[in-house]
Length: 166
Length: 166
Image 1 (tube, each protein chain N blue to C red):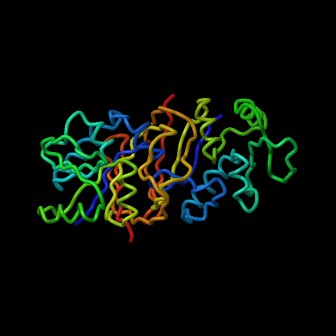
Image 2: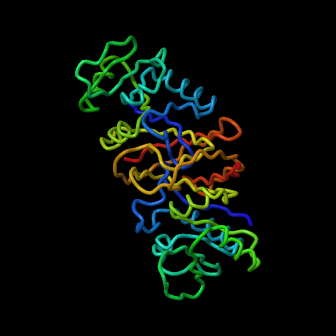
Image 3: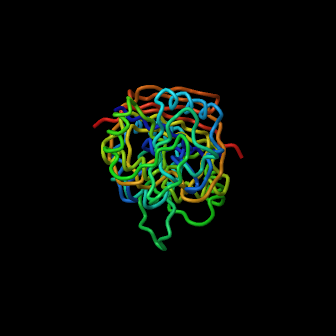
């Protein structure tokens, strides 16, 4: 199945100042962009710290949330998962999904990239600088990309779309 | 005087893997872009770790290098400096320069941003991912930018140009 990483970051590559930093600094147009592409896929995969920054689960999409908790509380629209990402993707394929959005944070993104499971990356560059903070990927990589499209979504925000070369 | 930060980074906001990492991964078009804008200004300001990654001083430009060394070795084309960035800029103005390029690394960039001395930022986004590494700025910021221009310099590399809102 096709995995598309969709994230917003500052110009200096930060997705948040800390792991509990709610993404209230992203543009309305970025939020709409995320809504559109994630509703098309129907699934958003994320870590539990990212999930905890949301006021509620993402609507009209399956929230697939990686967690280390033993007995996470059942929540409608949420599928708690653990273990190897390949096994999780196999299960999603069996459920009929053809693509999924990968939505952070840095650790989960890094895990999927490490396992060579990320096919496309769409990053919104917001007109901000945070300096120290969390980056798109935790881990050590040297991955090459192919630029597919540049989309200006408002006066100051740009979405860069890439294919991941494997 | 006008300070323009000009740097290349990976999509995930990394300017290098480590402070001794030579920027051999940037595109030829980015190197040409840097040459053009830095020769226009005539001055490149940088830290001594960034300077140490170059095989030789940048030609036809004054290399203004911040260092903590007590008696740095005299090198043609290099002006060793220390102390407050405002004092260094005043000296450059007295020498007749009207603008200067700020060229890294993260610590020097952060110091100039902290002192509200950066007027414009031109970042080349190269089609790569490094994961862990050095980012554009060391320090804690919440700075807003205004997007001025998007310039595609080759099939996969994009220069984003911003004004820093102060």
